[in-house]
Image 1 (spheres, rainbow, N blue to C red):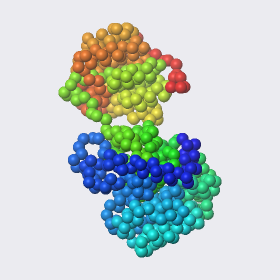
Image 2 (image 1 turned 180 degrees about the vertical axis):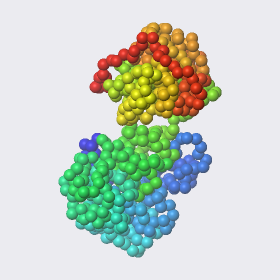
Image 3 (image 1 turned 135 degrees about the horizontal axis):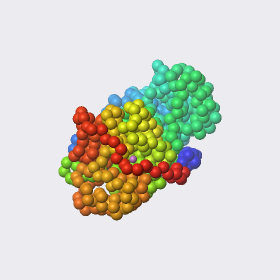
Image 4 (image 1 turned 30 degrees about the vertical axis):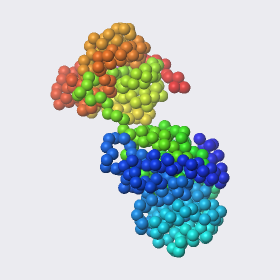
Length: 595
Ligand code: NI
Protein backbone atom coordinates (compact mmCIF):
# COMPACT_ATOMS: atom_id res chain seq x y z
CA UNK A 1 0.00 0.00 0.00
CA UNK A 2 2.65 2.46 0.97
CA UNK A 3 4.72 1.62 -2.06
CA UNK A 4 1.81 2.49 -4.31
CA UNK A 5 1.13 5.63 -2.34
CA UNK A 6 4.52 7.12 -2.94
CA UNK A 7 4.53 6.07 -6.56
CA UNK A 8 1.30 7.99 -6.94
CA UNK A 9 2.68 11.07 -5.30
CA UNK A 10 5.78 11.01 -7.39
CA UNK A 11 3.61 11.27 -10.47
CA UNK A 12 1.55 14.10 -9.08
CA UNK A 13 3.08 16.75 -11.24
CA UNK A 14 2.07 15.07 -14.45
CA UNK A 15 -1.21 13.59 -13.31
CA UNK A 16 -3.29 16.73 -13.43
CA UNK A 17 -4.44 16.33 -16.98
CA UNK A 18 -5.28 12.68 -16.57
CA UNK A 19 -7.42 13.46 -13.57
CA UNK A 20 -9.17 16.30 -15.29
CA UNK A 21 -9.92 14.31 -18.39
CA UNK A 22 -11.13 11.35 -16.42
CA UNK A 23 -13.45 13.40 -14.30
CA UNK A 24 -14.59 15.52 -17.21
CA UNK A 25 -15.97 12.60 -19.12
CA UNK A 26 -17.94 11.14 -16.27
CA UNK A 27 -18.97 13.96 -14.05
CA UNK A 28 -22.28 15.18 -15.41
CA UNK A 29 -24.02 11.82 -15.35
CA UNK A 30 -22.53 10.88 -12.04
CA UNK A 31 -23.54 14.01 -10.24
CA UNK A 32 -27.08 13.67 -11.48
CA UNK A 33 -27.33 10.00 -10.75
CA UNK A 34 -25.95 10.35 -7.26
CA UNK A 35 -27.40 13.70 -6.32
CA UNK A 36 -30.25 13.46 -3.93
CA UNK A 37 -33.58 12.62 -5.46
CA UNK A 38 -35.34 14.75 -2.89
CA UNK A 39 -33.92 17.87 -4.50
CA UNK A 40 -33.85 17.24 -8.20
CA UNK A 41 -33.62 20.95 -8.95
CA UNK A 42 -30.19 21.25 -7.31
CA UNK A 43 -27.40 22.06 -9.70
CA UNK A 44 -25.74 18.86 -10.77
CA UNK A 45 -22.38 20.03 -9.56
CA UNK A 46 -23.26 20.49 -5.94
CA UNK A 47 -25.58 19.42 -3.19
CA UNK A 48 -26.49 21.95 -0.56
CA UNK A 49 -26.53 21.16 3.13
CA UNK A 50 -30.22 21.95 3.36
CA UNK A 51 -31.00 18.96 1.20
CA UNK A 52 -28.81 16.54 3.09
CA UNK A 53 -31.51 15.16 5.32
CA UNK A 54 -34.69 15.32 3.28
CA UNK A 55 -37.75 14.96 5.47
CA UNK A 56 -39.33 12.62 2.95
CA UNK A 57 -36.62 10.02 3.44
CA UNK A 58 -37.79 7.43 5.90
CA UNK A 59 -36.25 4.15 6.92
CA UNK A 60 -32.77 3.34 8.02
CA UNK A 61 -30.89 3.47 4.68
CA UNK A 62 -28.05 5.99 4.60
CA UNK A 63 -28.57 8.88 2.19
CA UNK A 64 -26.09 9.24 -0.65
CA UNK A 65 -24.78 12.52 -1.98
CA UNK A 66 -21.90 13.72 -4.09
CA UNK A 67 -19.83 16.87 -4.10
CA UNK A 68 -18.31 17.04 -7.52
CA UNK A 69 -17.30 19.35 -10.28
CA UNK A 70 -16.03 18.74 -13.77
CA UNK A 71 -12.51 18.52 -12.41
CA UNK A 72 -10.58 19.21 -9.21
CA UNK A 73 -11.22 22.95 -9.53
CA UNK A 74 -14.94 22.35 -9.84
CA UNK A 75 -14.88 19.96 -6.91
CA UNK A 76 -13.16 22.55 -4.73
CA UNK A 77 -15.96 24.97 -5.68
CA UNK A 78 -18.61 22.33 -4.89
CA UNK A 79 -17.06 21.72 -1.46
CA UNK A 80 -17.01 25.48 -0.92
CA UNK A 81 -20.73 25.74 -1.72
CA UNK A 82 -21.51 22.94 0.69
CA UNK A 83 -19.47 24.42 3.54
CA UNK A 84 -20.43 28.06 2.88
CA UNK A 85 -23.91 27.95 1.36
CA UNK A 86 -24.74 31.66 1.58
CA UNK A 87 -22.99 34.77 0.24
CA UNK A 88 -21.33 36.45 3.20
CA UNK A 89 -20.70 33.16 5.02
CA UNK A 90 -17.00 33.36 4.16
CA UNK A 91 -14.96 36.40 5.10
CA UNK A 92 -11.97 35.14 3.18
CA UNK A 93 -11.35 32.83 0.28
CA UNK A 94 -8.05 30.96 0.08
CA UNK A 95 -6.35 30.02 -3.15
CA UNK A 96 -4.06 27.00 -3.24
CA UNK A 97 -2.14 25.49 -6.09
CA UNK A 98 -3.98 22.39 -7.30
CA UNK A 99 -0.96 20.15 -7.68
CA UNK A 100 0.77 20.94 -4.40
CA UNK A 101 -1.10 19.07 -1.72
CA UNK A 102 0.80 20.49 1.18
CA UNK A 103 -0.64 23.98 0.91
CA UNK A 104 -4.25 22.84 0.59
CA UNK A 105 -3.74 20.24 3.29
CA UNK A 106 -2.42 22.61 5.89
CA UNK A 107 -5.22 25.03 5.01
CA UNK A 108 -7.74 22.52 6.32
CA UNK A 109 -7.65 24.22 9.70
CA UNK A 110 -8.79 27.54 8.26
CA UNK A 111 -12.39 28.06 9.25
CA UNK A 112 -13.21 31.50 7.92
CA UNK A 113 -13.36 30.52 4.29
CA UNK A 114 -12.99 27.77 1.68
CA UNK A 115 -9.87 26.69 -0.17
CA UNK A 116 -10.26 27.00 -3.92
CA UNK A 117 -7.71 25.60 -6.33
CA UNK A 118 -5.78 27.35 -9.07
CA UNK A 119 -3.61 25.78 -11.80
CA UNK A 120 0.16 25.55 -11.77
CA UNK A 121 2.47 27.82 -13.78
CA UNK A 122 0.53 31.03 -13.23
CA UNK A 123 -2.29 29.95 -15.56
CA UNK A 124 -5.56 31.83 -15.22
CA UNK A 125 -7.98 30.70 -12.51
CA UNK A 126 -10.70 28.47 -13.89
CA UNK A 127 -14.08 30.00 -14.52
CA UNK A 128 -15.78 27.74 -11.96
CA UNK A 129 -13.50 29.20 -9.29
CA UNK A 130 -13.98 32.86 -10.18
CA UNK A 131 -17.76 32.32 -10.33
CA UNK A 132 -17.65 30.81 -6.84
CA UNK A 133 -15.67 33.78 -5.52
CA UNK A 134 -18.25 36.17 -6.99
CA UNK A 135 -21.02 34.16 -5.33
CA UNK A 136 -19.33 34.26 -1.91
CA UNK A 137 -18.25 37.89 -2.27
CA UNK A 138 -15.55 37.63 0.43
CA UNK A 139 -13.83 40.63 1.96
CA UNK A 140 -10.37 39.30 1.14
CA UNK A 141 -8.87 36.78 -1.25
CA UNK A 142 -5.78 35.11 0.20
CA UNK A 143 -3.06 33.24 -1.66
CA UNK A 144 -1.54 30.26 0.11
CA UNK A 145 2.16 30.03 -0.55
CA UNK A 146 4.55 32.29 -2.38
CA UNK A 147 4.51 33.65 -5.89
CA UNK A 148 5.71 30.31 -7.25
CA UNK A 149 2.64 28.57 -5.81
CA UNK A 150 -0.05 31.17 -6.50
CA UNK A 151 1.28 34.05 -8.61
CA UNK A 152 0.21 37.67 -8.23
CA UNK A 153 -1.59 37.66 -11.57
CA UNK A 154 -3.72 34.69 -10.48
CA UNK A 155 -4.45 36.34 -7.16
CA UNK A 156 -5.50 39.64 -8.79
CA UNK A 157 -7.65 37.85 -11.36
CA UNK A 158 -9.41 35.81 -8.69
CA UNK A 159 -9.91 38.79 -6.39
CA UNK A 160 -11.42 40.87 -9.19
CA UNK A 161 -10.80 44.16 -7.40
CA UNK A 162 -11.20 42.87 -3.81
CA UNK A 163 -8.38 43.27 -1.29
CA UNK A 164 -5.79 40.51 -1.40
CA UNK A 165 -3.44 38.98 1.10
CA UNK A 166 -0.93 36.17 1.20
CA UNK A 167 -0.14 33.52 3.79
CA UNK A 168 3.26 32.33 2.78
CA UNK A 169 6.82 31.57 3.54
CA UNK A 170 9.82 30.62 1.51
CA UNK A 171 8.75 27.00 1.30
CA UNK A 172 5.88 24.68 2.18
CA UNK A 173 6.89 24.32 5.79
CA UNK A 174 6.99 28.10 6.16
CA UNK A 175 3.59 28.46 4.50
CA UNK A 176 2.17 25.82 6.84
CA UNK A 177 3.60 27.73 9.80
CA UNK A 178 2.08 30.98 8.52
CA UNK A 179 -1.34 29.31 8.16
CA UNK A 180 -1.11 27.76 11.61
CA UNK A 181 -0.06 30.98 13.30
CA UNK A 182 -2.85 32.88 11.53
CA UNK A 183 -5.63 30.48 12.54
CA UNK A 184 -4.28 29.86 16.06
CA UNK A 185 -2.99 33.29 16.95
CA UNK A 186 -3.66 32.65 20.63
CA UNK A 187 -1.95 29.26 20.73
CA UNK A 188 -3.22 25.72 20.10
CA UNK A 189 -3.61 22.71 22.42
CA UNK A 190 -2.39 20.37 19.72
CA UNK A 191 0.03 20.60 16.83
CA UNK A 192 -0.01 17.94 14.12
CA UNK A 193 3.22 17.14 12.33
CA UNK A 194 3.13 15.78 8.78
CA UNK A 195 5.78 15.01 6.24
CA UNK A 196 6.55 17.97 4.01
CA UNK A 197 5.74 16.22 0.77
CA UNK A 198 2.17 15.53 1.91
CA UNK A 199 2.32 11.86 2.49
CA UNK A 200 -1.11 10.37 1.85
CA UNK A 201 -1.21 9.41 5.51
CA UNK A 202 -1.62 13.05 6.33
CA UNK A 203 -4.02 14.22 3.70
CA UNK A 204 -7.23 13.65 5.60
CA UNK A 205 -5.82 15.50 8.58
CA UNK A 206 -7.50 18.64 7.31
CA UNK A 207 -10.67 17.83 9.21
CA UNK A 208 -8.78 18.12 12.49
CA UNK A 209 -9.66 21.47 14.00
CA UNK A 210 -7.93 21.53 17.39
CA UNK A 211 -4.60 22.54 16.00
CA UNK A 212 -2.60 23.30 12.87
CA UNK A 213 -0.70 20.90 10.68
CA UNK A 214 2.97 21.77 10.47
CA UNK A 215 5.50 20.11 8.21
CA UNK A 216 8.87 18.42 8.24
CA UNK A 217 11.09 18.93 5.23
CA UNK A 218 9.85 17.10 2.11
CA UNK A 219 12.18 14.15 2.66
CA UNK A 220 11.16 13.76 6.27
CA UNK A 221 14.79 13.97 7.39
CA UNK A 222 14.73 17.09 9.49
CA UNK A 223 12.60 19.68 11.20
CA UNK A 224 12.77 23.11 9.53
CA UNK A 225 13.62 26.00 11.84
CA UNK A 226 10.36 27.71 10.89
CA UNK A 227 8.41 24.69 12.14
CA UNK A 228 10.30 24.64 15.44
CA UNK A 229 9.68 28.35 15.89
CA UNK A 230 5.97 27.97 15.13
CA UNK A 231 5.67 25.19 17.73
CA UNK A 232 7.40 27.37 20.30
CA UNK A 233 4.98 30.22 19.55
CA UNK A 234 1.87 28.01 19.61
CA UNK A 235 3.09 26.30 22.81
CA UNK A 236 0.83 23.22 22.45
CA UNK A 237 0.25 20.62 25.14
CA UNK A 238 1.03 17.88 22.67
CA UNK A 239 2.48 17.20 19.24
CA UNK A 240 0.90 14.42 17.20
CA UNK A 241 2.47 12.82 14.14
CA UNK A 242 0.21 12.16 11.16
CA UNK A 243 1.12 8.81 9.64
CA UNK A 244 3.56 6.10 10.56
CA UNK A 245 7.25 6.32 11.36
CA UNK A 246 8.05 6.13 7.65
CA UNK A 247 6.30 9.49 7.26
CA UNK A 248 7.36 11.18 10.50
CA UNK A 249 10.15 9.47 12.43
CA UNK A 250 10.04 9.19 16.19
CA UNK A 251 13.22 11.25 16.36
CA UNK A 252 11.62 14.16 14.52
CA UNK A 253 8.44 13.86 16.55
CA UNK A 254 10.41 14.06 19.81
CA UNK A 255 12.42 16.99 18.50
CA UNK A 256 9.23 18.81 17.56
CA UNK A 257 7.61 18.08 20.91
CA UNK A 258 10.66 19.31 22.82
CA UNK A 259 9.51 17.69 26.06
CA UNK A 260 5.77 18.02 25.44
CA UNK A 261 3.43 15.05 25.12
CA UNK A 262 3.60 13.14 21.86
CA UNK A 263 1.16 10.98 19.98
CA UNK A 264 0.67 9.46 16.58
CA UNK A 265 -2.34 9.10 14.33
CA UNK A 266 -1.45 6.20 12.10
CA UNK A 267 -2.76 2.98 10.70
CA UNK A 268 -1.05 0.17 8.86
CA UNK A 269 -2.40 1.66 5.64
CA UNK A 270 -3.53 5.12 4.57
CA UNK A 271 -7.11 3.86 4.85
CA UNK A 272 -6.55 2.84 8.44
CA UNK A 273 -4.96 6.22 9.11
CA UNK A 274 -8.07 7.95 7.80
CA UNK A 275 -10.05 5.97 10.37
CA UNK A 276 -7.62 6.96 13.14
CA UNK A 277 -7.99 10.63 12.18
CA UNK A 278 -11.78 10.28 12.04
CA UNK A 279 -11.85 8.76 15.50
CA UNK A 280 -9.77 11.61 16.91
CA UNK A 281 -11.65 14.41 15.14
CA UNK A 282 -15.09 12.91 15.82
CA UNK A 283 -14.77 10.85 18.99
CA UNK A 284 -18.51 10.29 19.32
CA UNK A 285 -19.03 9.48 15.66
CA UNK A 286 -20.63 11.64 13.04
CA UNK A 287 -23.97 11.83 11.30
CA UNK A 288 -22.21 12.58 8.01
CA UNK A 289 -19.08 11.15 6.47
CA UNK A 290 -17.24 11.99 3.29
CA UNK A 291 -15.46 9.46 1.14
CA UNK A 292 -12.60 10.43 -1.13
CA UNK A 293 -10.31 8.54 -3.42
CA UNK A 294 -7.19 7.65 -1.47
CA UNK A 295 -5.06 5.73 -3.96
CA UNK A 296 -3.04 6.76 -6.96
CA UNK A 297 -2.61 10.38 -7.89
CA UNK A 298 -6.14 11.63 -7.31
CA UNK A 299 -5.54 12.94 -3.82
CA UNK A 300 -6.70 16.50 -4.29
CA UNK A 301 -10.32 15.94 -3.36
CA UNK A 302 -9.34 14.52 -0.01
CA UNK A 303 -6.95 17.36 0.62
CA UNK A 304 -9.36 20.10 -0.45
CA UNK A 305 -11.90 18.63 1.95
CA UNK A 306 -10.00 20.03 4.91
CA UNK A 307 -12.45 22.89 5.21
CA UNK A 308 -15.23 20.43 5.94
CA UNK A 309 -15.83 20.26 9.66
CA UNK A 310 -19.14 18.44 9.88
CA UNK A 311 -17.78 14.97 9.30
CA UNK A 312 -14.63 12.94 8.74
CA UNK A 313 -13.10 12.17 5.36
CA UNK A 314 -12.52 8.47 4.77
CA UNK A 315 -10.43 7.10 1.96
CA UNK A 316 -11.53 4.51 -0.56
CA UNK A 317 -9.66 2.57 -3.20
CA UNK A 318 -10.96 4.35 -6.25
CA UNK A 319 -12.23 5.08 -8.65
CA UNK A 320 -14.11 1.82 -8.57
CA UNK A 321 -12.00 -0.82 -6.86
CA UNK A 322 -13.34 -1.14 -3.32
CA UNK A 323 -14.34 0.37 -0.03
CA UNK A 324 -11.66 -1.18 2.20
CA UNK A 325 -12.82 -3.48 4.99
CA UNK A 326 -11.58 -1.14 7.70
CA UNK A 327 -13.64 1.70 6.20
CA UNK A 328 -16.70 -0.52 5.96
CA UNK A 329 -16.28 -1.48 9.59
CA UNK A 330 -16.01 2.18 10.64
CA UNK A 331 -19.18 2.99 8.68
CA UNK A 332 -21.02 0.06 10.24
CA UNK A 333 -19.97 1.15 13.73
CA UNK A 334 -20.77 4.84 13.31
CA UNK A 335 -23.86 4.43 11.09
CA UNK A 336 -23.90 7.96 9.65
CA UNK A 337 -27.18 8.97 8.03
CA UNK A 338 -25.44 10.58 5.04
CA UNK A 339 -22.46 9.45 2.98
CA UNK A 340 -21.03 12.04 0.61
CA UNK A 341 -18.65 11.20 -2.23
CA UNK A 342 -16.03 13.82 -3.00
CA UNK A 343 -15.25 14.22 -6.67
CA UNK A 344 -16.79 12.80 -9.82
CA UNK A 345 -17.07 9.25 -11.12
CA UNK A 346 -13.40 9.40 -12.02
CA UNK A 347 -12.58 9.73 -8.33
CA UNK A 348 -15.28 7.69 -6.55
CA UNK A 349 -17.62 5.67 -8.79
CA UNK A 350 -21.32 5.18 -8.09
CA UNK A 351 -20.77 1.58 -7.04
CA UNK A 352 -18.32 2.59 -4.30
CA UNK A 353 -20.75 5.21 -3.02
CA UNK A 354 -23.47 2.54 -3.00
CA UNK A 355 -21.18 0.16 -1.13
CA UNK A 356 -20.25 2.79 1.45
CA UNK A 357 -23.88 3.75 2.01
CA UNK A 358 -24.79 0.07 2.36
CA UNK A 359 -22.05 -0.40 4.95
CA UNK A 360 -23.40 2.61 6.85
CA UNK A 361 -26.94 1.27 6.81
CA UNK A 362 -27.94 -0.56 9.97
CA UNK A 363 -28.57 -4.25 9.38
CA UNK A 364 -32.22 -5.12 8.93
CA UNK A 365 -33.92 -6.01 12.20
CA UNK A 366 -34.02 -9.70 12.92
CA UNK A 367 -37.24 -11.69 13.04
CA UNK A 368 -39.88 -10.46 15.46
CA UNK A 369 -39.99 -13.33 17.94
CA UNK A 370 -43.38 -12.09 19.16
CA UNK A 371 -44.78 -12.83 15.72
CA UNK A 372 -42.78 -15.81 14.44
CA UNK A 373 -41.24 -18.93 15.96
CA UNK A 374 -37.64 -18.41 17.08
CA UNK A 375 -34.81 -20.63 18.25
CA UNK A 376 -31.26 -19.88 19.41
CA UNK A 377 -28.47 -22.34 18.64
CA UNK A 378 -25.65 -22.17 21.18
CA UNK A 379 -22.21 -23.78 21.14
CA UNK A 380 -20.08 -24.24 24.25
CA UNK A 381 -16.51 -24.91 25.31
CA UNK A 382 -14.69 -23.66 22.21
CA UNK A 383 -12.90 -22.37 20.36
CA UNK A 384 -11.65 -25.74 19.13
CA UNK A 385 -10.20 -27.32 16.01
CA UNK A 386 -13.78 -27.60 14.67
CA UNK A 387 -14.92 -24.05 15.31
CA UNK A 388 -13.86 -22.46 12.03
CA UNK A 389 -15.54 -25.26 10.10
CA UNK A 390 -18.73 -24.61 12.09
CA UNK A 391 -18.51 -20.88 11.39
CA UNK A 392 -18.17 -21.63 7.66
CA UNK A 393 -21.22 -23.89 7.83
CA UNK A 394 -23.28 -21.28 9.67
CA UNK A 395 -22.13 -18.64 7.16
CA UNK A 396 -23.30 -20.83 4.28
CA UNK A 397 -26.63 -21.48 5.97
CA UNK A 398 -27.03 -17.83 6.98
CA UNK A 399 -27.82 -18.89 10.55
CA UNK A 400 -26.93 -16.64 13.50
CA UNK A 401 -25.65 -18.41 16.60
CA UNK A 402 -24.12 -17.77 20.01
CA UNK A 403 -20.77 -19.15 21.19
CA UNK A 404 -20.08 -19.51 24.91
CA UNK A 405 -16.31 -19.70 24.91
CA UNK A 406 -13.84 -20.87 27.55
CA UNK A 407 -11.17 -18.31 28.42
CA UNK A 408 -8.15 -20.60 28.31
CA UNK A 409 -9.32 -22.07 25.01
CA UNK A 410 -9.67 -18.56 23.60
CA UNK A 411 -6.19 -17.76 24.86
CA UNK A 412 -4.86 -20.79 22.96
CA UNK A 413 -6.85 -19.98 19.79
CA UNK A 414 -7.18 -16.20 19.66
CA UNK A 415 -7.52 -16.05 15.88
CA UNK A 416 -10.33 -18.58 15.86
CA UNK A 417 -12.43 -16.79 18.45
CA UNK A 418 -11.76 -13.46 16.76
CA UNK A 419 -12.82 -14.89 13.42
CA UNK A 420 -16.03 -16.20 14.98
CA UNK A 421 -16.81 -12.72 16.26
CA UNK A 422 -15.77 -10.99 13.04
CA UNK A 423 -18.15 -13.21 11.11
CA UNK A 424 -20.97 -11.71 13.13
CA UNK A 425 -21.62 -14.38 15.76
CA UNK A 426 -22.37 -13.55 19.34
CA UNK A 427 -19.44 -14.49 21.59
CA UNK A 428 -20.14 -14.83 25.32
CA UNK A 429 -18.54 -16.09 28.48
CA UNK A 430 -18.26 -19.71 29.67
CA UNK A 431 -15.66 -19.07 32.43
CA UNK A 432 -11.87 -19.34 32.25
CA UNK A 433 -11.36 -23.07 32.83
CA UNK A 434 -14.81 -24.59 33.11
CA UNK A 435 -15.20 -25.17 36.86
CA UNK A 436 -18.36 -26.02 38.76
CA UNK A 437 -19.12 -22.46 39.79
CA UNK A 438 -21.23 -23.46 42.79
CA UNK A 439 -18.10 -24.92 44.42
CA UNK A 440 -16.22 -21.59 44.23
CA UNK A 441 -16.30 -18.46 46.39
CA UNK A 442 -17.84 -15.27 45.02
CA UNK A 443 -14.42 -13.77 44.30
CA UNK A 444 -13.25 -16.94 42.58
CA UNK A 445 -16.39 -16.94 40.47
CA UNK A 446 -15.88 -13.29 39.61
CA UNK A 447 -12.29 -14.00 38.54
CA UNK A 448 -13.54 -16.78 36.24
CA UNK A 449 -15.85 -14.31 34.55
CA UNK A 450 -13.68 -11.21 34.39
CA UNK A 451 -10.48 -12.93 33.23
CA UNK A 452 -12.35 -14.37 30.27
CA UNK A 453 -14.13 -11.11 29.53
CA UNK A 454 -10.86 -9.16 29.68
CA UNK A 455 -9.09 -11.57 27.34
CA UNK A 456 -11.91 -11.33 24.80
CA UNK A 457 -11.95 -7.55 25.06
CA UNK A 458 -8.21 -7.47 24.43
CA UNK A 459 -8.85 -9.44 21.24
CA UNK A 460 -11.24 -6.75 19.99
CA UNK A 461 -14.38 -8.67 20.90
CA UNK A 462 -17.16 -6.59 22.43
CA UNK A 463 -17.26 -7.13 26.19
CA UNK A 464 -19.46 -10.05 27.07
CA UNK A 465 -22.48 -9.40 29.24
CA UNK A 466 -23.79 -12.95 29.53
CA UNK A 467 -22.48 -15.98 31.36
CA UNK A 468 -23.23 -19.63 30.84
CA UNK A 469 -22.11 -21.46 33.97
CA UNK A 470 -20.47 -24.81 33.10
CA UNK A 471 -22.67 -27.88 33.70
CA UNK A 472 -25.52 -25.45 34.32
CA UNK A 473 -24.24 -25.27 37.92
CA UNK A 474 -24.87 -21.98 39.73
CA UNK A 475 -25.67 -20.61 43.16
CA UNK A 476 -26.70 -17.26 44.59
CA UNK A 477 -23.16 -15.89 44.16
CA UNK A 478 -23.27 -16.70 40.45
CA UNK A 479 -26.50 -14.73 40.16
CA UNK A 480 -24.72 -11.82 41.83
CA UNK A 481 -22.01 -11.52 39.17
CA UNK A 482 -24.02 -8.82 37.46
CA UNK A 483 -24.90 -10.61 34.22
CA UNK A 484 -27.74 -12.86 33.08
CA UNK A 485 -27.06 -16.59 33.38
CA UNK A 486 -27.90 -18.26 30.08
CA UNK A 487 -28.94 -21.89 30.45
CA UNK A 488 -30.85 -23.99 27.91
CA UNK A 489 -34.12 -25.74 27.23
CA UNK A 490 -32.91 -28.42 24.80
CA UNK A 491 -29.81 -30.44 25.69
CA UNK A 492 -28.56 -32.43 22.70
CA UNK A 493 -26.35 -34.42 25.09
CA UNK A 494 -23.85 -34.47 22.24
CA UNK A 495 -20.99 -35.09 24.70
CA UNK A 496 -22.69 -38.35 25.74
CA UNK A 497 -24.02 -39.84 22.53
CA UNK A 498 -21.44 -38.44 20.07
CA UNK A 499 -23.83 -39.45 17.31
CA UNK A 500 -24.84 -37.00 14.59
CA UNK A 501 -28.19 -38.68 13.90
CA UNK A 502 -29.06 -38.78 17.60
CA UNK A 503 -28.07 -35.15 18.14
CA UNK A 504 -30.26 -34.05 15.24
CA UNK A 505 -33.18 -36.15 16.52
CA UNK A 506 -32.86 -34.74 20.04
CA UNK A 507 -33.39 -31.25 18.69
CA UNK A 508 -36.19 -32.21 16.28
CA UNK A 509 -38.11 -34.16 18.93
CA UNK A 510 -37.91 -31.45 21.58
CA UNK A 511 -38.13 -28.25 19.59
CA UNK A 512 -40.45 -25.54 20.93
CA UNK A 513 -40.89 -21.85 20.28
CA UNK A 514 -38.23 -19.75 22.02
CA UNK A 515 -35.91 -22.71 22.62
CA UNK A 516 -32.24 -22.41 23.52
CA UNK A 517 -30.38 -25.43 22.11
CA UNK A 518 -27.15 -26.60 23.77
CA UNK A 519 -24.37 -28.07 21.62
CA UNK A 520 -20.56 -28.10 21.80
CA UNK A 521 -18.24 -26.95 19.03
CA UNK A 522 -15.58 -29.19 20.57
CA UNK A 523 -17.47 -32.26 19.35
CA UNK A 524 -17.15 -33.03 15.64
CA UNK A 525 -20.38 -35.08 15.49
CA UNK A 526 -22.28 -32.11 16.88
CA UNK A 527 -20.79 -29.73 14.34
CA UNK A 528 -21.70 -32.23 11.62
CA UNK A 529 -25.32 -32.27 12.85
CA UNK A 530 -25.88 -28.56 12.26
CA UNK A 531 -27.04 -28.62 8.59
CA UNK A 532 -29.62 -31.29 9.41
CA UNK A 533 -30.85 -29.42 12.48
CA UNK A 534 -31.21 -26.21 10.47
CA UNK A 535 -33.12 -28.02 7.70
CA UNK A 536 -35.47 -29.67 10.22
CA UNK A 537 -36.26 -26.45 12.05
CA UNK A 538 -36.64 -24.33 8.92
CA UNK A 539 -39.10 -26.91 7.60
CA UNK A 540 -41.10 -26.36 10.77
CA UNK A 541 -41.11 -22.57 10.34
CA UNK A 542 -38.47 -21.63 12.88
CA UNK A 543 -36.28 -18.52 12.60
CA UNK A 544 -32.74 -18.56 13.99
CA UNK A 545 -31.59 -15.76 16.29
CA UNK A 546 -28.77 -15.08 18.74
CA UNK A 547 -29.46 -15.32 22.45
CA UNK A 548 -29.26 -11.52 22.59
CA UNK A 549 -32.08 -11.26 20.06
CA UNK A 550 -34.08 -14.07 21.65
CA UNK A 551 -34.16 -12.48 25.13
CA UNK A 552 -33.06 -8.84 24.67
CA UNK A 553 -34.57 -7.93 28.00
CA UNK A 554 -32.53 -10.41 30.07
CA UNK A 555 -30.84 -8.59 32.94
CA UNK A 556 -28.24 -9.20 35.66
CA UNK A 557 -29.01 -12.24 37.77
CA UNK A 558 -31.83 -13.49 35.56
CA UNK A 559 -31.92 -17.23 34.89
CA UNK A 560 -32.64 -17.75 31.20
CA UNK A 561 -33.74 -21.22 30.08
CA UNK A 562 -35.68 -20.19 26.99
CA UNK A 563 -37.56 -17.15 25.70
CA UNK A 564 -40.63 -18.31 27.58
CA UNK A 565 -38.80 -19.41 30.72
CA UNK A 566 -36.82 -16.60 32.31
CA UNK A 567 -36.62 -16.39 36.11
CA UNK A 568 -36.20 -12.77 37.11
CA UNK A 569 -33.27 -11.85 39.37
CA UNK A 570 -35.73 -10.78 42.06
CA UNK A 571 -37.18 -14.29 42.26
CA UNK A 572 -35.44 -16.84 44.47
CA UNK A 573 -34.66 -20.20 42.89
CA UNK A 574 -33.15 -23.45 44.08
CA UNK A 575 -29.41 -23.51 43.31
CA UNK A 576 -28.50 -25.83 40.49
CA UNK A 577 -25.59 -28.25 40.64
CA UNK A 578 -23.40 -30.31 38.34
CA UNK A 579 -25.49 -31.82 35.58
CA UNK A 580 -22.93 -33.40 33.34
CA UNK A 581 -22.27 -37.01 34.34
CA UNK A 582 -18.54 -37.43 33.67
CA UNK A 583 -18.31 -34.83 30.93
CA UNK A 584 -15.11 -32.77 30.80
CA UNK A 585 -14.46 -30.43 27.86
CA UNK A 586 -11.60 -31.63 25.69
CA UNK A 587 -8.43 -29.54 25.67
CA UNK A 588 -7.08 -29.84 22.17
CA UNK A 589 -3.88 -28.56 20.62
CA UNK A 590 -3.35 -24.88 20.00
CA UNK A 591 -4.48 -23.47 16.67
CA UNK A 592 -2.30 -23.48 13.64
CA UNK A 593 -0.56 -20.16 13.10
CA UNK A 594 -2.03 -19.61 9.62
CA UNK A 595 -5.60 -19.38 10.93
NI1 NI B 1 -19.23 -26.33 28.98
